[in-house]
Length: 100
Image (cartoon, rainbow, N blue to C red; front, side, top):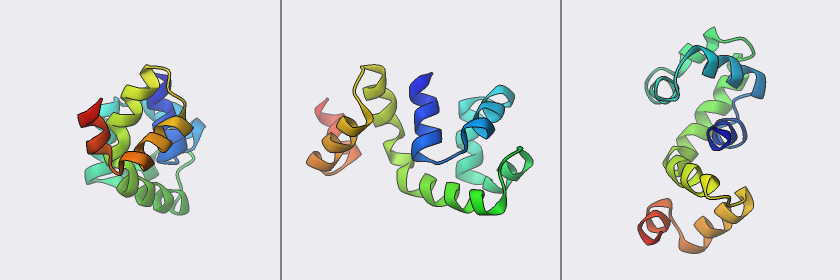
């Protein structure tokens, strides 16, 4: 649960209070679907304005492939800095997941 919140708050940059409200309202799968297919729906949630949405869109596009990596490694107790360093060392999320 913490790895989910970390990823969406710190990596995708959904504000913490907004994220809590979103996850109380919809599932993580629904959130992923919104982020992938209809990001403007996020404007329906308190705390998400157009400027925030633009940042979320940019960060989602950059980091959606890292989601599985963060979820797996955070669940194992890896720090966020260590996860980033591992990814940077091996070059891609896919390579890291294939190795581990």
